[in-house]
Length: 86
Image (cartoon, rainbow, N blue to C red; front, side, top):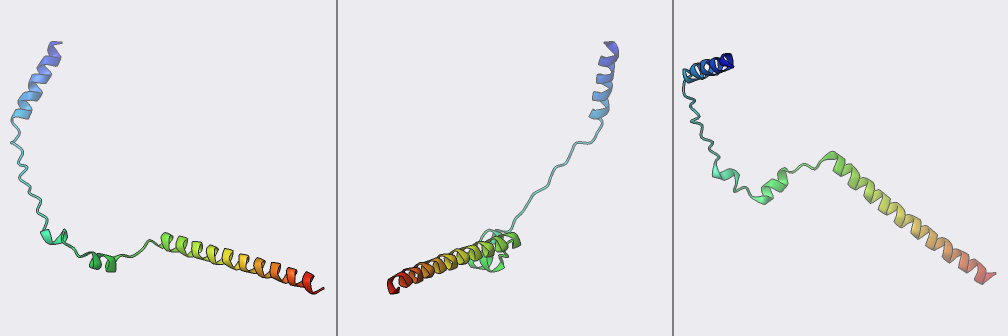
């Protein structure tokens, strides 16, 4: 127990001899960075490639579904006309 107390006192004495820390840092941010025009920010915006590809695939799927439904509608009309004419 006495050895622990002596070690603590020795550590306190050693730490007290260290110089006082100087944390005199000041972070300065120019105001102009916060007043950026939204139009300029949109011009510099580059979309993520994964988002671009996902949007392209979604558009192709939508066009494909539209084309399929159009073909099915034409087939139904053709089928009805064939029954009426025969």
